[in-house]
Length: 290
Image (cartoon, rainbow, N blue to C red; front, side, top):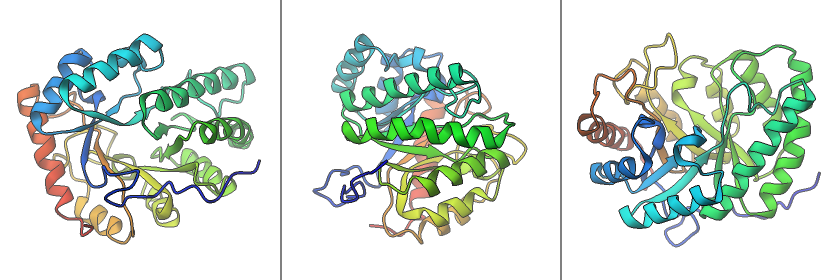
């Protein structure tokens, strides 16, 4: 499959397409029990101007026309913008699934998400290209190639880029590396999740190898035993080291806080969201980019 090579997906200049550079976003996954309208109001009050729509589609309904209409209305009401959309994921939305019926179903769902990005005016779709419990890696590589060959064509046509997220496990790491290597195109890049990388240090090798294709950063924390999605600095991940790695990159992208109240010590929105903004700002101050 051929792709145009001259699409400037990394224009972060002040007047360029990605004027959100170095602003903070927060994922709506922070607390799915709070309706989207109230969530956006609280997010804005805490200081965030950008959001990432979480992968639980039933919360925002971004994959349905009426859901997108509501998202646009709410964003205008509360003065926030959608920076990225996280495609649904899990065992039922896995484009690496060896069983063809399930793979095709996942591809259809991801295609809907790409079209939703285009309608919402955001250029970045976050995608897990494989599940978390894997086997049959050779078969999965074949299915990923088949899926992405179709999905990247669609994404290019509607001017959306796919940011594939590092999964934090060995087999998923191998599949992600394979996909980025064989599809050398600006339509496909990397979403670097530091919490997942804290569970699999090899993920930092992907960040180093594909730093020019870094389209999204998910910032959260854990204690090294599991993916807890704590607030930054609430766990024991080496965030100064992450900042040092990111300072080697010439151009960065918006950083999304992907922390959740579930395992955090901050259990109320009034405590959690301001602390999320404060902690993420603390991390941003470690970055040397203008």
